[in-house]
Image: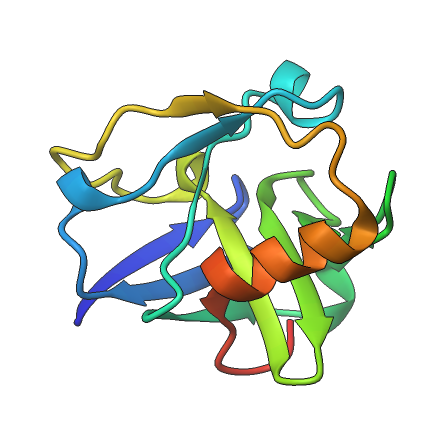
Length: 140
């Protein structure tokens, strides 16, 4: 598995993303919702990969939940850097990463495709998260 590191601007929070997929094969999504679009958030995930969030001080990892309340959006409480989103179900936590937090951004990464999840129910959104998001190796 290849290892990719990402972090917020100040470096207090971050993640380690592992995947066997080549960056050119990543599913890269630009969410068009009223939250993600203005922030330019771009996501990827690999259900066969793994993700571990890191932080110097656990209190600096801030969560924000909105709309259908199915996921927590994770930020650095110091600089405001956005890392991605995490959700939990009976099988544990799963997440997507904000590829703009990767450092360095991998060469050859697939172009982001606009996606809209408007009209999803909470249940269908939970099901999509379970099927497509990356397992989190430890609690975020």
